[in-house]
Length: 146
View 1: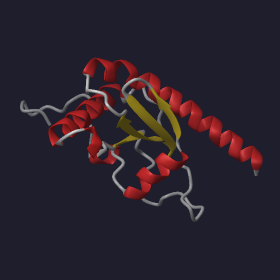
View 2 (view 1 turned 90 degrees about the vertical axis):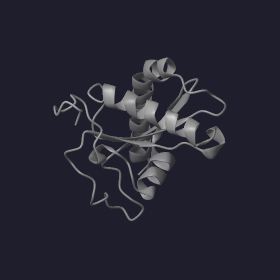
View 3 (view 1 turned 135 degrees about the vertical axis):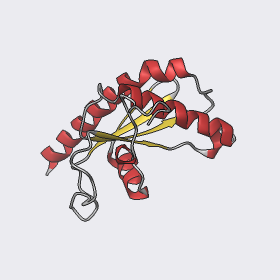
View 4 (view 1 turned 60 degrees about the vertical axis):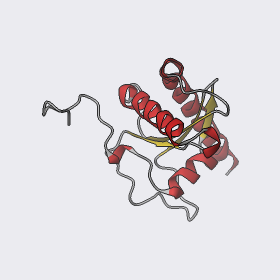
């Protein structure tokens, strides 16, 4: 909610976040990956089963897409890491209507890059699209092997 009492047109509620460690790990290991000069994006469909072969029971079917942000300590001190998180979340919040639904996205910055809003905003949607395509093509390859 904004200070004026009205709702923001695009929000980033907890239901739109990847929060569990197992969900991060699953996206990083099995998701499609795409990178540019400043970001690396991993995309994984919601319906990908866990190691035991079943989809996660707590995944909400109503959530269009979810974002997880991971910032390594090598990126910088807490101020720098928090700036990265704020900028990535804002790029997601502003562009979530343009992103393919049904995916978990995990985003991290590349090494030795300074957080720059213009670079993040410019490449975010393109990177997500590439990661989704790669995720789908890897799923197609694995289904033909079975």
